Length: 480
Image (cartoon, rainbow, N blue to C red; front, side, top):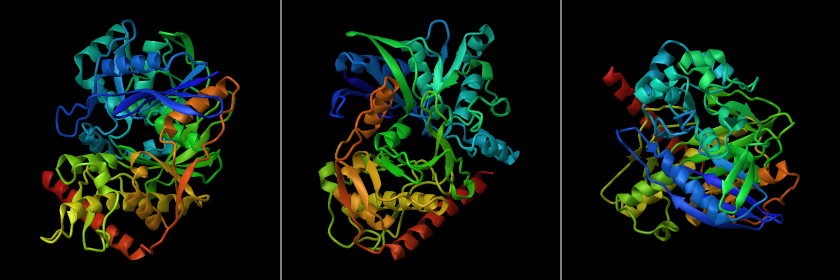
């Protein structure tokens, strides 16, 4: 008995095999190309993703069941008969619908999305992207007129294509801004607001259950779990109690807090209620979501600028910290998420002088991500006390300078997962539960305790963020 996870993320697809005792290995990882056809646009090739999923599944071998996690808000259109894409994947980072979102805000519709979906108006979520596809792509419009259009997040496309089930799980649906957070069904008011025909959307189902059978090189394997990647990581960490928090440092920073049966609405703090998961036959478990849109993407950007050569070069820095040296970086390269939700904000170094080196510029980038993460966790803690140490994962969690600085900023113990594939592990654990097996929890962590009082530095960073937002607002006013 082994369980497979397909982790279909923003930059790669990978297959993992997890044994009943929790031992895990990566069978195959395949990167995919990022397309930037216009400023603010981010796309993936759906066929490339399908090829990569198929290759990863075949490389993993036989398994008892498959759990699949997805990118969340990334979405697309395809044909119900041919199953062929009618659009590229419009990635969660994509900002092409900013002007439409601003119009909806100006018309006073944000109160509706907050009340029904629990989400603010923002191009981050799927709804405006799906509406854009139907309004701008002739192939999608023709399919709609012919009655063969399907719109949805990437999980629904993968499942429809590979297992024949046109469904999406409740955690993924909760990221679209089209699902009613209480009824757990598509909401006619929201669909009408965005201009997304409700009849072309997939059925919403629990996170575990029957997602069809995938035909592989090693025979048919049932898919028994489908979930958003960040919720998979939350489950993989064993965060099940109210107040449990995990942080994933990937392309962006994704923090989730379990709120149990309670839907906590705190839009003024920039926190979003969402569905963590729903096990088959059980009530949904809710969470609070808070994100920083740019994390490792900012590190890769700094590397591409030539500020450093290898990741090993940025694992330690001489004292003092960059912010103590008068240098701050606001990592708003794709706007500011929680708590500001300012789409037009842009990244900025503040305090630059001739004395600052390239190493200090990178140091400031790392610190800026830690400060922004601190803002998110502080917002969560003000809603519901954070329970104990905070587990973290993702590539940046392996950087000792960053993790120690993050612990200092949070003034909390943080525990870096020694197992790097927590997201896939969570998807496999959910798949196993669906067939009656409970894989043991992760127990191997590296602990970081706070060493320095960062309250003064946090205050300096708050001022830097305010300047970034002010710049964004001025730029928006100038455009008007």
